[in-house]
Amino acid sequence: MRGQTQVRIIGIDPGLRRTGWGVIETDGVRLTYVSSGLITSTSDEDLAYRLRELFEGLSSVIAACGASEAAVEETFVNENPRATLKLGQARGMALLAPAMRGLSIAEYPPNLIKKAVVGAGHAEKRQIQAMIGFLLPKARFDSADEADALAIAICHASHRGAAALARRVLKEGAAG
Image 1: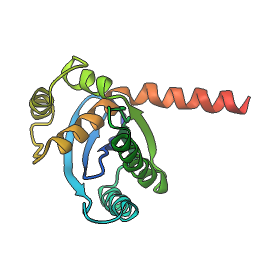
Image 2: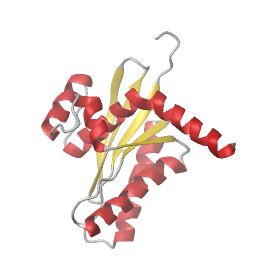
Image 3: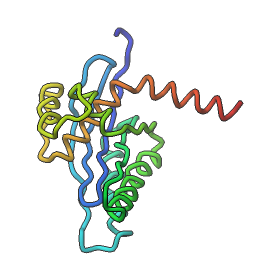
Image 4: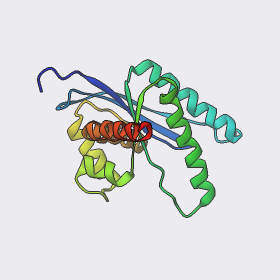
């Protein structure tokens, strides 16, 4: 794709204990690993302070990495309502941090992320990690949360055109 510019994407896998992040670049065809890491919150702190740790950590990463687009995994509801609520609050920080920097933000369900990376919507963590190693040979990650964040960024790289079109249609519909 001649004339296509590089786009830097940060993928965010939200969690209250551990939030994974992964940054890639794409020109529409090629994917390049930039960096990845983990933001943790202090488990003995009050919830508000743990959320602040996640927000500040993500804000710092976003400022340093130079991403112009962000992708965040959608929350799945599990059997424990309190855990689901806390995950939702952590996810709020994962959406707020890139929004505060003016990034374009897309959200993807877990099955779509797995399908985009592995080809199957019910892939296991080890399959995702193996495919990330194949798609991003220079990637170095120390946790499943980092690998998941890179998978989210890869998913966005392959769906970003459709996501941008959907946002435009929604804006036009709301304006008209």
